[in-house]
Image 1 (tube, rainbow, N blue to C red):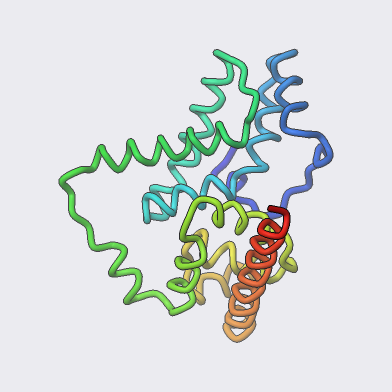
Image 2 (image 1 turned 90 degrees about the vertical axis):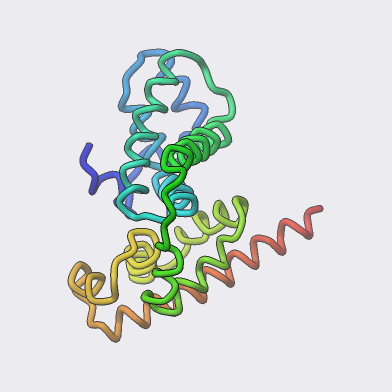
Length: 203
């Protein structure tokens, strides 16, 4: 599996109506890693978001997603997991915390540099994913954006590409890219706030 396939935001999943647990049971039955590939593909954005949240570095986050994938495959060979999404999140979080501990003593200014050199929209989104739960809601909301907004938001926020890089990769003009990002960010906030409100009403 290539790095590009890890971070593809458009997925044609004919197993979209198959639950995580059903895919796990298929894997436990025949030990075919393709079932895990289908399962992990569902959570690529979540894993990338978690890795970016903790590591604050694009390349390190991408590498971590691949390392987490490999670790998950190894661990699932050893024992059965019942609540996959919760377990996967803990694996990802622990992996990132270990990487942070490994680089203790190394003081970086990357966050401050990013805030001063990146456009204002990125700072706004950092506030949007201020905790683990809203990070999950962001992953859900991102899937509800129209394809153009989803593509631009994914490239700009999750893959940390510049306006120009997004324009080159998508074929949109700079003006269109900025419009899709701004509208996508606004719609993300609306969707997340709506989901939070719905959760409060259910309590």
